Image (spheres, rainbow, N blue to C red):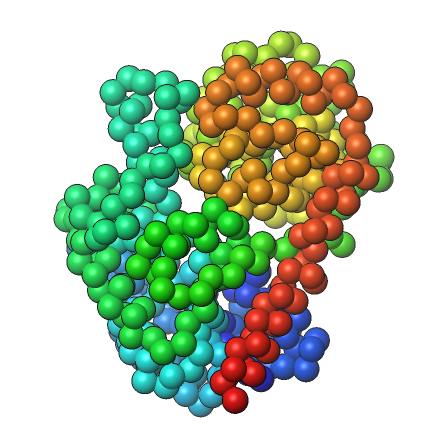
Length: 426
């Protein structure tokens, strides 16, 4: 069996998922190819680069002016499908198609013409909206402009995707449009393109996202929930005391030796990640606590409260595991996640977690490994911080729970799905 993955990247974020699935495929005697738009090429996996940096820059500019992300890049996409014709995949596995690298009509017309079975993993909501990748904070943004607090927000947000989009409240959110709102047109055209496919299987990493899909124009297609997997050989408790000390010293955290450390991690601290919530929480905690946030920009680090310490993003996985291990509690105050991988990473490193009861995050947290609190209720967060930090850490329970997300197990489920589809096509 030959499987072709298509994703915006091959080594970052969702790109790692495509590559890891490809490796599991090859271990089980199949072949895989990863087609990607930007970033570094994957190691030890056959790949196909889609387009060039100048082409993506033009696509980005076009989208900014016209709100037509995904409807430029025709030349690069034609070249890709010609190469896929030569590869002759038995299954095409779509991942993130946004990111200014693909022309959706060219890709979907080719998929419809060939009749190749399609698996589409939705890592966010862009596939079934007319513009945005995330929408649950749309009402929250409006509430803030009207002077309300975080605690008055809901997780519902915008639901225009159910009937057709238009008058988009998130037009300036990624993929931002500066001039016009084409969300209604985009929604109609995406729907028509998808409904032209003969064989489509959808996968989501959470039950929450599967529920959203069932309320969209994708509701006609079967949906399977396969949580993302984590590499448990990489994410594990750091037991090297000397290395932990070195990491602490590197980031000037030595002074925190007698404090309770609350850790937050994000690759980009955009608004939905809850940075404002961390700042408000800092004012509610006693002096025995310090919040450490990893992944902040230089500008964000300049505006931190006194008891919040900001670190830049680290690409050093061992260093990140040391930070997870040393923390007394991992906090995710994000308002929207389709899964919440940092929660799993923290648990894999033996650290208990706390998150909001928003979107998919509660699905991965049990009372044995942490707590879930109402969205935006920072008094409840502070109370649970006290409870969890006074109890002894139980790294074994956290590690045991994280094993449910072992990437070998989870990505093997994709290969099982491919083999089921292959059997149906005979």
